[in-house]
Image (tube, rainbow, N blue to C red; front, side):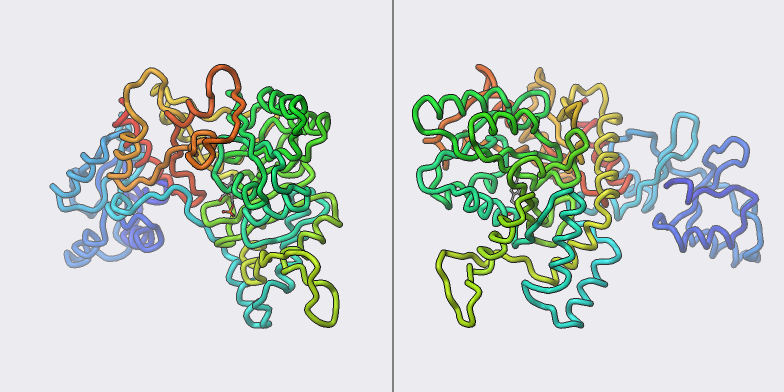
Length: 486
Ligand SMILES: Cc1ncc(COP(=O)(O)O)c(C=O)c1O
């Protein structure tokens, strides 16, 4: 916050020293007491020179000589900020508005560091739980953190039962096994997603059928799903399960999808890897189907470095998932196995990180939503089409996602390359599965004559959205985008 750097002529040298010491800025900004207009920047060197001149810590700031500050105006080109720093051999430049009031502060170190897409954001309790696990020797895929993480998670999303596993992919794989998906079975899956949503179908030897997105929320189009379910029924090879992906922090139109699954006898699995914290009509994403899966990969809204969760109201199915995830070892006094098992359980140490992360989920959602809102308001007028939020839904805005204006001749690759060259990590949206060479033989049901998810891929991008993104970092991203698009 810029206010933490602001002082006026009645403040003392002692106070400025305190500000420089306490704040991340490394300087204080002297403003006129009545108008608030910026007068000068004060560094610790200025204080040293004042002491050498005979002033003491109680001297007021009017003892400092006048010094016209180097400033930039809002929305200044970042390259210009950098070149001013170089030209004047300074490492701080305040940003002022048209009235000359300070509204921001550029620091050279911040301009030089890379802005990442969605880095992990650790809190304060992770170390406590991890240390506890190590001190009590629960360094295994069993232990109190694991039990509590599952219980706390189930309560948080409002599910009867949960199994913590090594990844979201593992959770999805288990959900397909528990749904009885076998070789040759048809499974409908959102096309606009990451490949991990469909890889487990391939592990089971299933046949993916890809469903396009709808324009309203960019997730699975219920109309296209209905066509796929009908086609399956008509040609005697019904779709057995539907994987509805809740992308970029937003629930799909899940009630309609759930109704269709019920009508056609298909099992609904929600891939909520990216939507923990989101809701649809107030109900948590991931709890509408028979199974829901979540990911705690390093880039997700909360992370365990790597991990996942399978949830269901079917407590017996979740018990079975835990059994399968621990090599399907039968309860005997020796190693007895009747079915193929997997090594999929989460470790008790990582579950400790998960517990701490889960406790701050609401704050993380708030931060990400705020970041999205800032992009929308500060990039207004450039024609960017932002991912719409469904009326019934509440998105976490896990990633801030948009599309370049339809009438632009600027390519999305060149746009992202421009940002990357300036140390900003932004990415294209997922390339739909029906356009992947891996799935050329699979069928695809489009939203209309238009391949909607294909068109999103042509123009879509994801901007830095991590909950630890600072205001300055975001302003840097915004300035670069403005600069490029205007
Ligand atoms: C939509 C989607 N599904 C599934 C996964 C798989 O999760 P994990 O990486 O934990 O295996 C991810 C993310 O990584 C994802 O984004």
